Length: 573
Ligand code: C2O
Image 1 (spheres, rainbow, N blue to C red):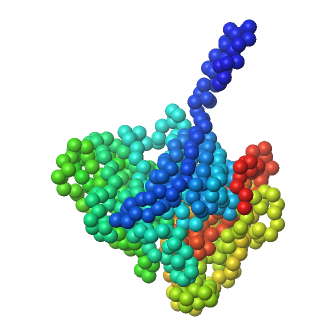
Image 2 (spheres, rainbow, N blue to C red):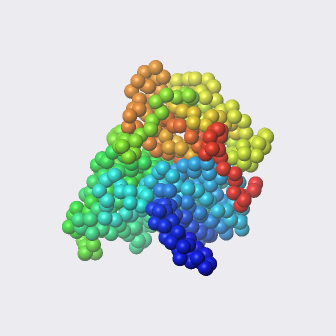
Image 3 (cartoon, rainbow, N blue to C red):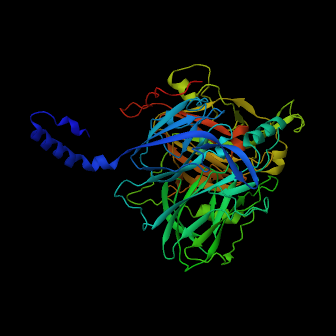
């Protein structure tokens, strides 16, 4: 509001009108704000596990700064690229309604920001609240370029659970002693899997580690006061590993995942895949003491190598003597599938009057996508014996374009993509039977193929893991939408029998879902957001190998149903 306008002779009249306006509109004025952030992407030397290396960072921090907004706010983040890599940043889980230009995946919704240039991500948060995160969406830069994105409820709107006294962000990550770009480039040259990380991290710290016995760092400390409650915003920002998270001697009450409220339930272990977020209430119900916090890998495919080092942090009650001994907790074994299943099965949408689960009852598109690995010839891959591991959806290994798909769509640039992505696998087979799978040709086809949806189309998508090479858990992330996880099972999806047991009442709503090893999940969503929306496995190595595709959602006919025009500073390819 501009106070300088009151300079005419009829000052009092204007003042009166102004006050009236202020009175009427004040609830609106305080309700939504514009939040400005500045992200300077710079190289920074970081020491972890007895080694120092330069990392790509936002504002010199690892993890990067937390972005706070309230539901309804507009967020403007100026990202200035001061490093030698092309760059883009994704606001993971933000729906970006009509603002796909601000979504961030490089070559999908934008050309990357070249070194020396900047781009302002401009979006409004609507219809969602909770814990999300942001991360680089190009190369493997996400390893160190990530941070929390916290969407608070609108001013005056309470949480649907007792308000905890305090809030804390806990970001889980993976740390390589060497440069992560070198790690993936090496792997791509060989055709084989990349080296696993050297440590997991909790808020940037691995804790005392066998990889660095001399390290004096006890890791991250979560300080708590006896009797107080804490809202823990847990984020898995790791590149390639699903994680178990637990705190010795304490139970956690899960209240929200992927920025949607769930029916609260108590657990001693959280299971969280890359791309997922879990918000839980911790009650500091002890009088004093130190309690171990642990993050360890979940991987139930024996042949897949994992970084088996547990990251540890410490929950410390204020006033506890430093000589006090720490209460220890075991990490679950890496193949603790029952623990993972129990956690997943407990997740249900809150489905209250304020927060109803709007599950599509009928569907316009019934899609069946197989997801998994494959092998293609690679004459230069010596270590891979002339072949390379790839990944695919419905046998299509997605080829990244060199021009952004959203621009190509908006400006009608021909030749960048096709819209013939198959709704079903080209040749059905017994996806999870090991003998049938062993007899399969593991080769894949290549293409930049999209699946076209009309505005508001209702979609059911069954994601079926294949046992090709090895069955594996795949955390599949969809940009631009939340979806409901209506069904889940082991083995092959049965289109006759399985839909009968779908939960269309209170299924969990999220943006990233774990497809179980050798099993399937069924999701439903409504395509109420025009644009080009990436879908991929959030294990970075699987994305790199081609486990990705995109949906093209057409504009609707109504006044607010079209993709907005691109911003002036949108980077060029
Ligand atoms: Cu969090 Cu496309 O990713």
